[in-house]
Length: 163
Image 1: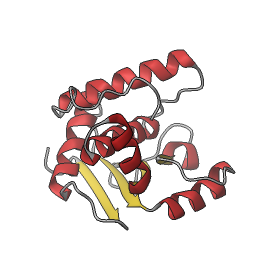
Image 2: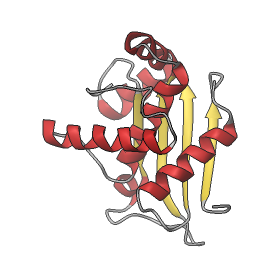
Image 3: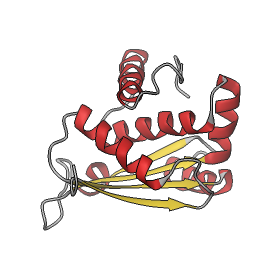
Image 4: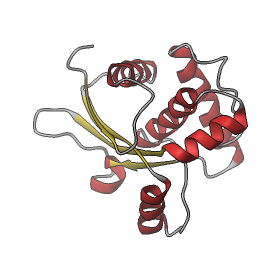
């Protein structure tokens, strides 16, 4: 899928996952989700302090969270947006590594597995998924489990509730 995905990575905190692995995962996930056009997204791994600031600014919640997704289609156009080259701009995913680390410990799995879970959750939001009620949450969590299975992490992250 060379040229299919422009992935911009910003690691404010070191990533236990190599850049090539992140790229591979996102390419697999996009294919699994039926995305066929070239697309662009960014992933930022950051601190609780930084994600708290973003959460306060954009969601009016003065607390850290595990993952935030800023979908380009919500912010820029209701029907999605493409740049002049035809690349679909998906948006930005921001993950708090300290929160992910705590959740991984509580769930009994590795940090890399929790980061994959959170990244898949963020990606679904960028593609328009949401979970305003229990049924839609369960559908989204099931889709996340399928995405993790596609990268062979299905048996290792056993989330049944929203992380």
